[in-house]
Image 1 (cartoon, protein in one colour):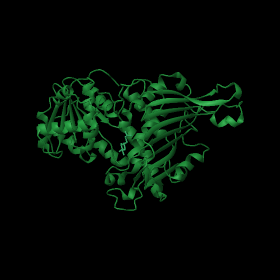
Image 2 (spheres, rainbow, N blue to C red; image 1 turned 30 degrees about the vertical axis):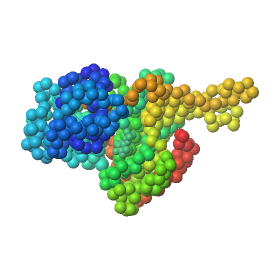
Image 3 (spheres, rainbow, N blue to C red; image 1 turned 135 degrees about the horizontal axis):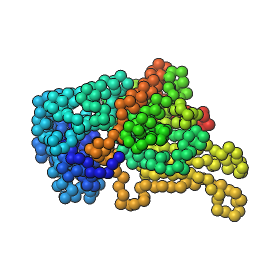
Image 4 (cartoon, protein in one colour; image 1 turned 60 degrees about the vertical axis):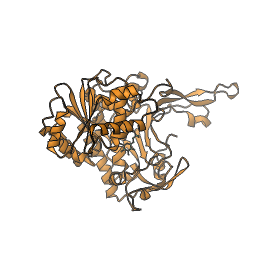
Length: 490
Ligand code: BG6
């Protein structure tokens, strides 16, 4: 994770017309430009099948920036500088000839070529093959891959094998955009720069960990994609397991990409398998029915556009009790839950500490006596440490209260803007640092565990349980944690 100005790049964005490019990637590239983080000679080359002229492409980018940036961010001067970096090449991903045209827009003697594939994985192979055919791959050329990398272990291997025929692993940048979120990176600082936490980060002190990623959105018109995937593949296989790794990994010996990723793979390999024997106690699947969110009625999953009122068994909610079978975490459950159409959009990690071995205060107060570390990733990024203190009151004797030491990253500086995860990740791909990208063995270890769980659901004929939109998931997800004498952090 570096702040140096990188070598000049030709940043080639395949899928430049797509939703991700328009909504996230061009705004992120613009912010990097505005913050002077791009090399002055770096260029951005949009690639798509659309029949756009150069000026039509630039108009499209301007329109998307106007839509997604805050007012005042797109000044005339910044736009002039940013638009001067833009170029467009119309390419049919399957046409080798079109890649020769692309070659004319690239100069690898002056700039590193970074290829960002914001396209379906089904064309990754064609793109790699055609880049190679047009002699556009050299020892410095990089490739950035968007998820999904497969829908199970086998299909992810096929994608990885295809890309590996053309690019070495140290040139492949697999995106998990959660790793670009500032507070996720802050976990590294929190854990490894504070002996206060580092020395207590184990099963002697920690009772359990909760990771919640809740969204208020439904499918946003993505039914045909989502119904084949579900929340387990869409969110758990990547984002939740990456968060779990950041919490559970051992301290890396150095802060470099492979040292960090070696430790994450160890965690994934140590995850206790969830199979048909234990799945009913360890995991719950749900699907939202009609309900209301923030006072607004929303339809159920089967009534979503594209759903056709069908009886789908695809989950939009998952809760799991995971265990990491190693010395540090033996006996410490990690409760994960994620769902669509929940009451609130929020990503939060809660580390719940064990109580003291002996209790000397008023028994009626026992429930409030625990320490929790709450790491809020979004919105309102911050860290709260719940500690127990005496109430300032002469009448009450030793009356206790649980209060929070609050580190609020959003209010420290009112002019501060939290960078979007993609800004960090695009920058790192240009700098050439892979620390925040997922290595092949991580993806495969993660699929291995998820496949076993998904198979367990199908072997046991598990049916999704309904929950009303605007609630925290099916009742079974509450039972999952309450069976262990614990409850979800509110
Ligand atoms: C994506 C999923 O990876 O992450 C989406 O495909 C989900 O279904 C999104 O909505 C959530 O990302 P964020 O950054 O808004 O929490």
